[in-house]
Length: 293
Image (cartoon, rainbow, N blue to C red; front, top):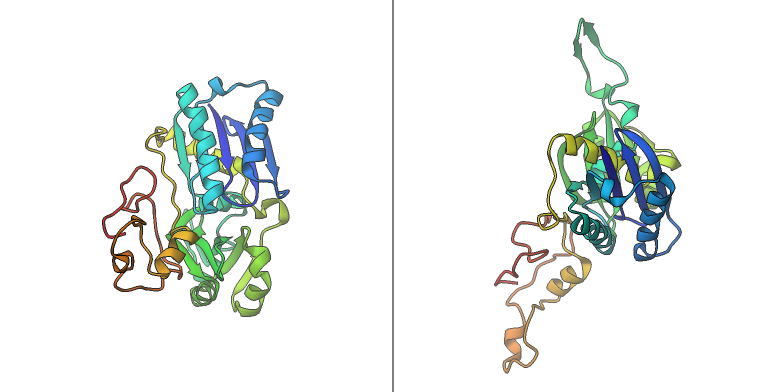
């Protein structure tokens, strides 16, 4: 099986080609250029260097969020364009799950309190929780906790102070990676009271090879979607949308004869982090705009 992985959810643009769990090639760039400038040339180069073609692909695995709204859409558009042209299925991969995959070989347990045959009792202090954290601005991060490669709880947007407080209550050991690590490294070092560490530089940011490897697993399980059914998961609304709502504005006809109807009757603080997923009457993608927006 041949799978192309694409990740443009953050500052890093990355693509990788894997064949039967072997990474044939991987390109990543974190040089300040927009993904629209770098992604397609990288994809073209990866096929040229490996001697493969798009028509050879069994699937395209794409980081589907959370992350940069513009970056996610560039990655999705690139993947959809290739998929539609060649009739290739797509695979949605969580950005956070992809990051956690970077360090999956570290294992989730340091030791066991009891061992009897295949039965083991593990204490909380032995557990290694992996926390991908992505900068969501306004002292917030997109994050989720992974234990032995499995998501514990849910992916969410949360304040860094609240995250640190929750982790201190959890106990165990904790590993952080993602583009929010350079932003909040000092804060975490000052406020965490549990054992913790940070991923090494080569595993700190998004890697398309991790996305592709997860995609390979999903492909074998039949978890693919068509270009039409592919969805992004933003977790929360774009900043422009939240600021518009915070000001009390709504979509309107600028020629309306009654200015008072252009304002909502009440406002709320929608700039705070809150979970917001595509596909739940959001008005994004192929859905219609709710009447109350």
